[in-house]
View 1 (cartoon, rainbow, N blue to C red):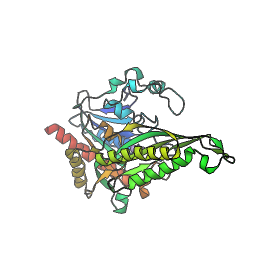
View 2 (view 1 turned 135 degrees about the vertical axis):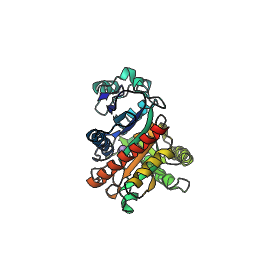
View 3 (view 1 turned 45 degrees about the vertical axis):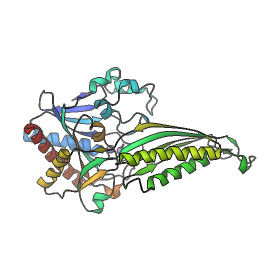
View 4 (view 1 turned 90 degrees about the vertical axis):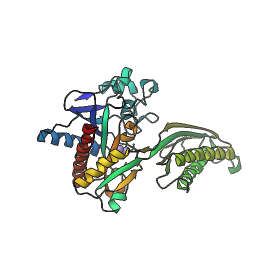
Length: 363
Ligand code: HGY
Ligand code: MN
Ligand code: MN
């Protein structure tokens, strides 16, 4: 067991050596989240390692099981942290004065967890070092449940792009200010919320395209004051890079038009921009073969949610095993996966690991 410089929690079996096989996910959740998103992947990976130990099975490469730090957007314009640091796409210089939701400096929090915030680059893994990374995760969608399937083979991972937006008008008396003399920041924000929904529904945003305003703050936020300023986040996602670029441009254009029409000042900063990640054919094949080995139908599907696997992809060939979850719900207390599906998912994860190990041995 060790904690790397990025405060990723890593268990390892199988002795020294450069190249490794890796299983993992995250155990942090969104606020008021569920108990399965990420957690199933870490527990499933631990169970695979435990079974290998109990069976006395040695793989051809050492195996690492990783619980990645901060997969959820906890540090709003920086997360995910652990997997991006490991892939070399986030370094200490990005941390700046970032603070956690608890008011601690991010650097202090990483150090308190056993990391080394002054030297997070030490957690970076080079291309080739990880022979294959596999992640078990709940689908966070309804495809598998609707088709009465327990297991899915992930083909690609949609990219979240997140912007921080402000709209500033004039706070004024809600009673004494005539309607045609207002510059109402919240009315403008309301138009933007609906514009984001319209953009995400547009035909050129292919079916996995989505758009959400999930966070909004009104100032001064009082019943008898016209809202002067609104801050909000816009998130758009798609598995198609071109559709994503169209959506981001449309958000910027709509925001500008709303602000001009209403006489509002506006700012928009795309703070987090990812690219869709197609998972390598051979990793999809390892998961599909594992399904066949264990008698599960092979159901390939994209992931609308993002995962550590996507952030690790620049340095590690990644594959994902999905299990169905109740009504596709996630990021809410109602999130649920049946124990039997979790067990089957862990079995497929273990079998896919054998397949990846076999490929590594014969490479
Ligand atoms: O937002 C996501 O897709 C992930 O759950 N953090
Ligand atoms: Mn999540
Ligand atoms: Mn997750």
